[in-house]
Structure formats: C-alpha cells, structure tokens
Length: 484
Image 1: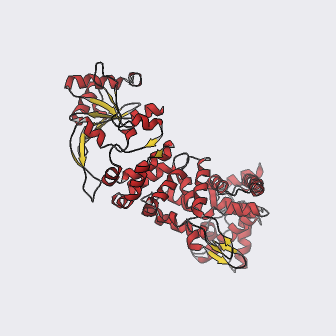
Image 2 (image 1 turned 45 degrees about the horizontal axis):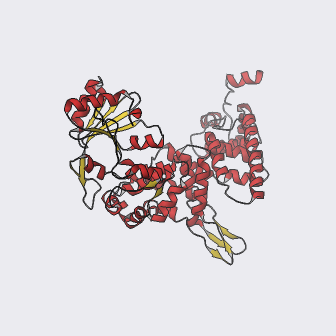
Image 3 (image 1 turned 120 degrees about the horizontal axis):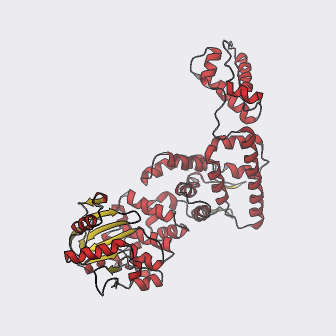
C-alpha cells in the first residue's frame, strides 16, 4: 500500500505521529477508492488521541495554519491543500439515543472507531506510523473481500447500525447505486425492518443522498431499492403514487412509476444536469391526480403537465430543495414537456414553433432532451416515427430561430411606447395592445420588427378608438439594419 501514499502530506503525518507518539491512520473512502481505482481528493485521518491538536501540529509543519478549519463541536479539523482536503479526527466510540441520530461520543481505540463505521468497505484503514508497518492495511471486517464481491455490508449487526443512524440506510442504497454493488441480504432486510427510523433524519440530509443517487449513471437502481424497502413511501410519497396499473373493460394504462424510472435513466445518458434529471422524475408526477377513464377513449391524464408544474414547489419545499431559479427551471420543464411531443405528432407550423421557442427561451435544448428521454415505447415502428418527427421539429426550431430570433424574445414595442403613443395610463388597454402585437408576431402576421409592430399598434389602437398623439420613433440601430 506504500505506493498509494506518495503524497507529501502522508510523510508529514507519519513524522508528526512519531514526534507526538500517537498512532495515525488513513481510513474510509480514500482507502476504499484505492482498490476501486477511483481518484479521491478527500482524505480522512484517524488519530488515536486528540485529532484537532494533531491537525494543528501538521498544519504548522507544512506552513498552512491559515488553511486549517477547526470544528470544535464535532472534534474535527480540516486542512485544505491544493489538491486534497484532509480531515483529522480522534478515534472514538459512539452510543445512540432512540430519538436522535446524533451519537454520544467518547474517546476510543482503532477497533472502536472501525466498529462505528457504516460499511465494511469504509472501515478499512492504512497505518501511517513510520517503520515496518507503514502502509499496512487494517481490515478487521473483510472489506477487501466485500469490494471484490461488490457487496454492501455493515461491520456489526445491521439492525443496530441502521437503527442507530438511519441515514445509513440511504447511504447503503446510494453506494449500491453509484458502485453497482449488491446490498447483502441480511442488511437489506434490516433496512426494510428499520425504515420508519428514517423519520428522525432531516430532510436536507435525505435530499443530499437522493441527489447523489440521481447523479449516478443509472439512478433507477437506487429508486427500485428505495421502493422495495419502503423508504421511498416515507421520504417521497408522491413518486410512489405513480406505481401500479389499473384496468377497466380490458384497457390498461402503463405503470407510470417504472415509466418515470426509464425516462430518468434515459435523461442520464444525455446530461449530467441534476435539475433536468429532477424534471424527468417529476414530469408525470400529477398523473395519479388527473387519471380518468373515458369509455370511448380509454385512460386520460388531461392537464397533468399543468398540475404537475404546480406541484413542484410543494415537493421542493418538502424535500428542502432550493426554491430558486433551479426550481423554476424544473417547473418550466414539467409544464412544457408535452409540447415538442405534440408537435412531433402533427404537421409542424411556424406559429407553433415560435410559441414553443418563446415559452422555452434558453431552455429549449434542455426541453428537447427531456422529450427524447420521455419516449420509452418498445415498438420499433413508433421509435422510428418519433425519431423522424423529432428531427423535423428540431430542424424547424433551428430555421424559425435563425429567421425570427424568438428565443428570449421581447416584443419590439414596449408598454411605455404604447402609453406615449396614445397618452394612456398604465392599465388594461396597454396590456391588450401589447398582447395583440405579441400574438401577431407569434402567428407570423407581422415580422419581428419594430417599425412593422408600430404600424400594427397604430392600426389596432385607432380601431379601439384611441387617438395617436406621438408615434414612437424607430431606434437608430433599427434604421441602420434596414439601410444595410
């Protein structure tokens, strides 16, 4: 293992451990990732003794005392190097109370500290003390074997491990998803048994684990495990409501839970964007609430895109996700997700394309990715048809955008222009005229051009009985364009 400890910080830690006469180890994810051949910038150093004081001596030795952050409440210290973040902690043993996942902490031995770790693959340690044992692996729970067999297993009784700190249940599923590992059967049963304990964990911590699952290559692995263990019902019940198939008069709808997982996996092949992945999760979230059976038509979900968009903010609040432009982006994607699909099924008019460009703005490319991901049919004919029609829509989008410049478009005549022209106060009439010019441009009745728009407004204003007092001038830049 010595060859993996070639960073200078390990030599410094070894030397300082000798000076202080303490044992020091690198433990946890850094050790695991050595065997997984994954790069790791987070290093956990375990000291048998006072971790904070040891961290101060290391920081002083490398001349980086100003980069050392001490967290007294947690008994840890973080040293930020150019290429690594090194966290120091003293070995400890923990005991838990039933109503809290915050442990009562006491000083402990290496064995105590490894016992408290979540999984065997995270409990491996490497000795850093100088001498013949430097670089020696300490693996009391056979984490190396579990890595070889791709198994998630707890060091001690999983019932105790998950009951003590229920967030570990989410972490087990997250690691299984990220690493494509299998959760050991006894451990999986313990998660199901202890699922109700997840209610003592904060929504922020749960969402952090959910996001890591969503950012994995194939999130459906994690969501299937969350569903099968009963955790998903407790942390995200709206998604569980998508599950199931109903049949009336021999006509069934698809299982929208598994369809959503397919869409999520599809979008993950197209983008790393967390919020577009959330849009995939939520695009059909209102289908249970809008589901109806029409005898002459079959199952319908009319308006699920509009209702779904209105559900996004509640779900984001519930999960303590950001209530900012990221949430607004997800709302927009959910609201618009049917629009390109509808265009792909019909004759694509310039007017419909202009409206889509206007409503989607800069997010049109993300919307098209979501729509591609939403095609989960296994019918080869339908797949080819959708693909051909989507290509037609995308070409139309490109052509109309280049010609009419509608993306992020604002009408060339402002409300202030209208107020000046007709000596109108701000109010309903100004809004009506603004809407008329916008609709005329989107319909293709007039060009996206200020002079044409002004002429149109004059005509409509006069028809409405308004007097033209001062026709707003065409800006110099518009004149220049026309001269060119």
